[in-house]
Image (cartoon, rainbow, N blue to C red; front, side):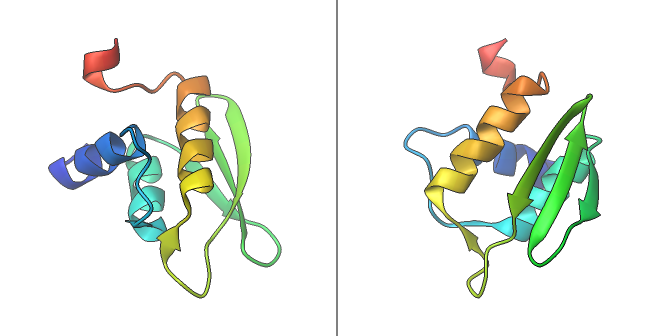
Length: 88
């Protein structure tokens, strides 16, 4: 994982939850972690990582991801066994 994806991961796990994360950055980070992303209907995307599956909605028209969605991504990552190095 490169430094940009590391920063995105750190921001996903940040407290308080950031409100200005770009969805494209989150999606790229997920792919760098080994996730498989497939398109659903409308703005839905299905993400599979380490056997854990979740469905998210791409934000629109703004590219910024809402706080509740960032928290959902964090919960998904934890369920998939992904944590920050400092949390191991």
